[in-house]
Amino acid sequence: MPKEELKVLRERMEKVIEHLKGEFLAIRTGRAHPGLVSDIKVDYYGAPTPIKQIATISVPEGRQIAISPFDRSALKLVEKAILASSLGVTPQNDGEIIRINLPELTRERRVELTKLVGKYAEESRIALRNLRRDSNETLKKMEKNSEISEDELKKYTKDVQDVTDEFIKKVDEILKAKEKEIMEE
Image (tube, rainbow, N blue to C red; front, side, top):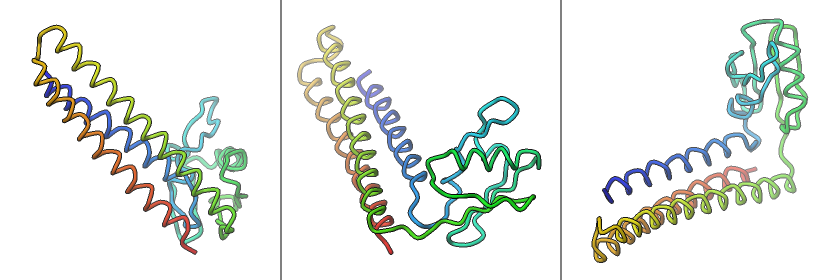
């Protein structure tokens, strides 16, 4: 039973890491990436739909994103959604494709983005620590219900801490890589 708890803990912590990676994908670093626009919601036939579901997103050049909707009538809707997003860029609509040219990031903007990724990383660390707390509480209940011994509780609590440390280290590595990417000129 405690081994099952460790397995569940590991799976839930993996989800925290995946969520962090997703958050980081949406942060602009001066290089074009489909992830910058793929989850922007478009009001498509009355339903908020991510751009990735109604268009092909490509990166023809280092600082340009091209969006080609499957349905040409969605061009204006996609353009409107991009303008309303927090991306801070103006799309160019040529009647078939929407092009987004990403400007060079200023030093101040790079510092702001570094602070933002640090905030996201700290939120992930907090989520990991909350998962650790939940697992430890589950283990204490098992010990209280005589499902495991006191020695086993100590052993599994240490295992939970080891898993938590491993995932916090992953968060730190992902953060360091993203900060480096942001600060590259």
